[in-house]
Length: 229
Length: 95
Length: 102
Image 1 (cartoon, rainbow over the protein chains, first blue to last red):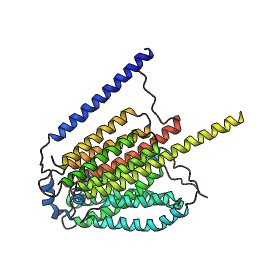
Image 2: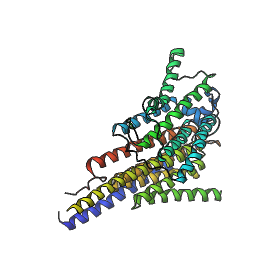
Image 3: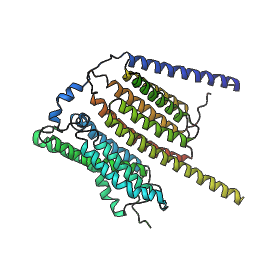
Image 4: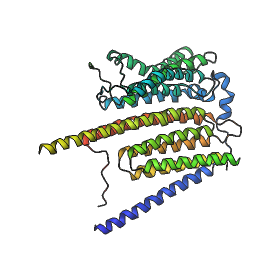
């Protein structure tokens, strides 16, 4: 093909691409706009079953009780992603550059407040917006701040305690499910009296797990197990 | 009513504009920073849609954590580029 | 048309913008950004269409699904970035090779 033909066909290809995308956008917009104005969805069913769910926040009830399987599998997805990142290589070599005064001041002030905030979000998630994922992400942000200011945990905490913390969320969920399975024959069917307590227990384990997993994802590789000086 | 539509309209335009600028920006650092801003405006959109739990999750995870991950990756990419440039400079000096 | 459909249309627009950027750019980091924007568009459509309830409070099931989706998106982004750095370390390139029209 000559250069001129090449230029014309690539220009034509660009126009075809643009038109196809506009057609896709138009089709999707038409599909969205042709939906009815009002749709009940699952709203009524959720709200009428709120007493048996053990919490007052409908989103928490859906996440941890009515659709608990999805949350369990999501903790699994987080772990699998971390496994993938760990299998791709070790974490980048840790440059011992100390934090500047601003970062050091921020870390000393912010990290305790973030831990407190995570605890608050976890507790209040039962009645108001909040919950395990929001609390876990604030905890992860505190962990990332610590990582950025070159603070590293002692090496002996990097082996089994780290792995225990990572598995705790999924493990607590599965443990509750299996216990309920052996007691009442139904996996993850909370008895209405215990539902609130079980949800809080699972959420607490999940918060720690999510925080540690997201911070470990930020580290970007297997943490070094060798001696550090 | 007009106020609601005005605010929602502005949010909608801000979302589309931020996404467009983030995706078409020639500099990667600017693109990532605009993406973080896009995530924060999305958190506002979630609040307007009466989804405060989603807003909390988006602000912390969608904007904050994803932004931190992207910036860390960009910094490592630039580090690798600097190392290669340095070694090329050293090789050029040796010649 | 109330504001719910405005946000749903914005979601469709974000999805299309993200898809366009995904196709056009060859740099892998830009592709990751584009996929994230596409995901945000899908979440907007889900939650916006969940707000069409006749009462005052929206349907909480799409909210839970989108929270799950956001966490899955961030873990996928982290894995994609680790893959990007590995590709860079192995092949020295961060861009996919240009397609040639032969």
